[in-house]
Amino acid sequence: MIVVAGEALMDVYEAGPTPTGSMLDARMGGSPFNVAIGLARLGTPAAFYGGVSTGVLGDRLAAALNAEGVDLGAAVRLDAPTTLALVGLRPNGVPDYAFYGHGAADRSLGLDTLDRVPAAAAYHFGSYSMVVEPTASTLLALAERESGRAVISWDPNVRPTVEPDREVWRRLFARMVGLCHLIKVSDEDLAHLFPGADPAALAADWLASGVGLVVVTRGGEGVSAFAAAGRVDRPARRVAVVDTVGAGDTFQAALLTALAEGDHLSIDGLGRIGSDALARILDFAGTAAAITCTRRGADLPRRAELDRAGDMQKSGL
Figure: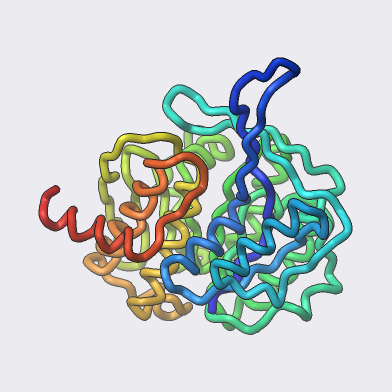
């Protein structure tokens, strides 16, 4: 079991003008929500821990998690709104977000809910839920509680429109590096928080602090991983990109799945992973992310789709 902790929300796209305004297309999202569903679709048992509204949008989010087979025993239903993330797309398909979530359920997770969280092999954290209170303190307390006995995985997924102060995110980095065993981070996040820094040098510092595996994604330029066995670089799979919404979350879910299936998803296992195994894991995760990029929104692939894509890749198609 992997517990995924953080936000569940609605991504809202502008879908064209109407005579009286604009049509909006709301799609379920939130990085941790996506990762939980991505895990379930790949056959990995997952539970979701986070605040979910008791309103109509929260009901939709909870129903979707339940339908995918995600364990909702740790989810906390709250009488609060659901965050809306207005999504705009740049010409290359990369999204820009504007968040409307003051007082929303995903930001209102209290310390008194920690006893709902079950024991698990790994706990994954991510995105802005780590910097908005009281949820941030609750999630950090969970990471601290579990760090010595289970894998702590983290994707910072920085959202400056929620928290524009870089120092807040940097302080979070300093705390999480001391707790994490797996860090997956995008080159955009690194450039925003540590401008001019060498990702390899940052990764080396984190490994020296006790992190077992660091993965740096670079979109269409591929991915680099850093572990005790050394550095592994893999190219991105070329596809016709519709948008990249959810691609990083897909990569995360597939990364965790492949690590678990290879018997590497443990504190000791991450430290022992070899370069060949790591290359195969990165290719698996990269193929999953590429599939998501071919369709609109965070529509993560199911295992059968990923298996077919892998067979086609081996055949050179």
